[in-house]
Amino acid sequence: MKFCPKCGSNINENQKFCAKCGYNLNRDLKNEQCNIQNSDVVKHKIFNDDLKGKKINYKIMPKNMRYGIIASVVIVILASIFFVL
Image 1 (cartoon, one colour):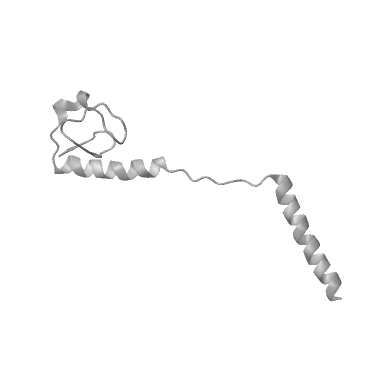
Image 2: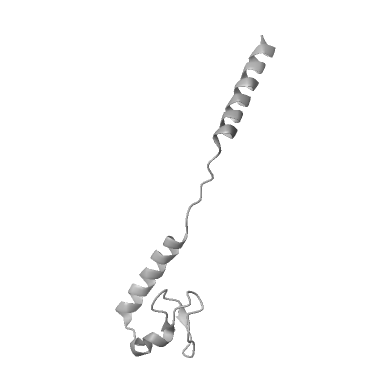
């Protein structure tokens, strides 16, 4: 079984390109053998690549919407105080 040198995914012997990352496997036909140490490096690289690919997207609320929500909360608090007294 061979591994892609770029992303480390499993590849078949007859594949010309990696199905996961699209890497051209014909360039590395000379380097097909891999020992246990290289396999560990590839597994570590997969983990790092998976983390790099994921981005955390935070949606920032527009200032107008933020001020509107704050004003609504203040109005509700003041109205509840007015009706209680």
